[in-house]
Length: 223
Image (cartoon, rainbow, N blue to C red; front, side, top):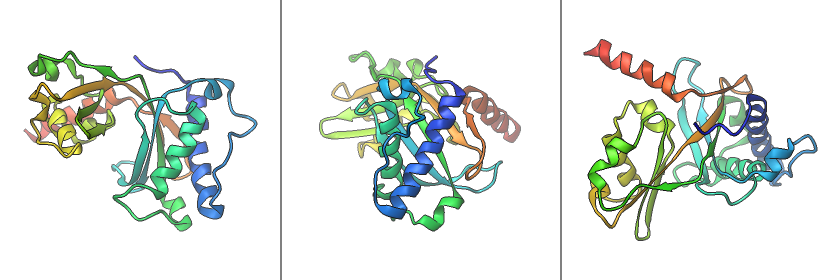
């Protein structure tokens, strides 16, 4: 399982994401890594995504406010978090840029991505068996089209692996069954995810497999 960082390092990254957005919204400046940055975060290079959600209560999924990042290692971890956080706040084309007044109404989540791994081409019908919901995120690529879904997404929506693949294709603006086409590349990765429980609140590491159990139990009760 991909877990490169301790909970203390995860707390540092989430709080840094919030601090980076606050400073950018106040002054337009991109902060530098602070002096107390753990040395590993300056040396390591991973893909990074920051997700910002409107807080709806501790027992409810938040409403997406922005999510942007780097699927592959472009910066060291700490600079990747700073830049992805700012981009999620002001550059996500699905939303208007955030205002400073919103900061106390949103939560920050940081996902650290493992290197992308290409699923074996030539046998796409085996992909649903190879993708583990709760463990994997996916990237769908064909030509100039590309779509990424973080591993928490299928858990939050209670998707199975085939639905996950279909939704990944649509995220790439391709037909939902595009993953069956041999010209389509499907890549998987894992992520370590740290999230605020409430705005400016406690930071925890998400256990997607545990969350998935709750989803399955809910579906069983509905049936």
